[in-house]
Amino acid sequence: MFTIYSLKHTQVAKPSDTNREYEMMKDDVMRLRAQANRVATGCLRAGRALVLGLVMLGSATGTALADRAVIAIGNAFDNLDPHQVFDVGRVASRLNLYDGLLRWEDNPPVLEPWLAESYEISEDGKTYTFTLREGAIFHDGTPITAEDVAWSMDRILGINKGAASLFVDVIEPGSTRALDARTVQFNLSKPSAIFLATVPEIHVVNMDLVKEHIVDDDWGQAWLSGHEAGSGSYALKRYDPAIGFQGERFAEHFIPWGEKYLDEVEFRYVMELNSRILGLIAGDFQVTDAYMPYDQIKRLEESGTVDINEQESMRIFYGVIHNNRAPMNDINFRKAINYAFDYDSFINDINSGSVARDPLPMPGNIWGAPSDVEGYSYDIEKAKEYMAKVEEPVRELTIGTITGYSTTEEAAALLQAGLAELGVPSKIVSDPFTVLNARSMDEQNTYDIYFTWKSTYYADPHNWVGELYSSSTIGSRNNSYYSNPDVDKLLDRALISTSMEERRGLYEDAARMVVDDAAGLFIYNTKWFGPTSKDLKGQRFSPIGNGLEARWMYRE
Image 1 (tube, rainbow, N blue to C red):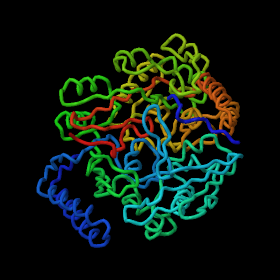
Image 2: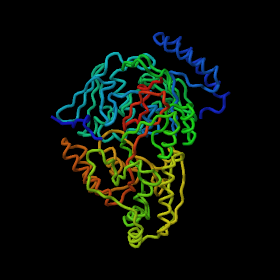
Image 3: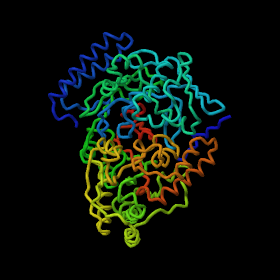
């Protein structure tokens, strides 16, 4: 029998133009009226949302209601298609508007049944058969069938974006089959030790609805980028890519609602950190980003209006080094970079010791992380020794940061100071996350070095060292363009092994090699602080999703 290890034991603006807002709300009311007339079974839900819409029309300031919450995010929701995007910055639309067969919940993360009530795995580890819950429906009232799941899998592969990189090597288009209305079967081309852990990323879309909007064989991408066709806990009420999106509670969701919940949730794009903080303190927002400089966390904590819910995370902060571009393609130069960064000052002074030094390409609290790796330290003399071994001329380097995230800017400034001591000129470029993410996947256009976080998409070591440093993921998840045949062999073996202990050793060895190669600038593992208004309750944190699943939240 093919053995899968137990995942349960994994360690683990505001709109400034009120006229524009008025018109959007007015259009929303008209849409809800049409929906009420069109879908008889949704009349009560649409009626309630209509009342909310009318209340909001009477208040241009959008005053928060007791059953409504505003979540301010520093990343734009410029695309709602769950199969086109795969970053944590836009995870809220996937978690709240869509469902998968399984879902990661809580911390340490546990893989829970979701749209599927059960599953079976064949002895050869290549066939996964899921049974869907009975009675589950999409937002338009149509039943969710195994055919929708199979088509969603084919759509992910067909558009080859988002989470496609998780599946293209193990699933062929057309190989996922609906055995009957409630039974879907995934037929893998080879065993995959991480397949079950990645199943939550197969977000199920309403096949018939999306097919109605396909243009020029685009799989409905143009339409779905600004609309939704899901079954999630919240149905899309309003969307503006410059502002964010609003969802209204889907009362008919297949997972029963508790006694307390939010009838409406708004995810609003607020680029500036200070604006998010002030809005949370003032009560304009109820939730904001959980990852921010510790001095800002203290500021929120001292406000008296905000609760901080600190938990250990699995989100590493690191510098991505372009390994395939001179002079970074010289290991001596990469080692010089690693010794030129002042880790202690960054962690203890800038971050007030609120993070853990983590010299690995994975969080230290995941199994498979070697405990004997010391990593690099700030040592300018050693850095100069390695610089003396660099043969190619050294040019000005471009260091990328994420707009609105001061941690990346502070790290870049600290590195720039260290490079200056080595006589290496550099410039810092700040881009919104969506721009930085797009540039990182273009080998010619990406930065020489940029600072970012690697988040948890599934609780397995492959989420980090495998995705970030395997040659097979270059240009998709491996944005350092690092390639080492010996590392590839270890990672390839770890992907098909049926033994957790063997996999542990393989990932430990791979991590050691990546550190020895100075493939990146590994700095720390993050804490999740979860700042919320004091009247916001029920937020559940999982390293996968970062506490942005609204269905558990309510206000008192």
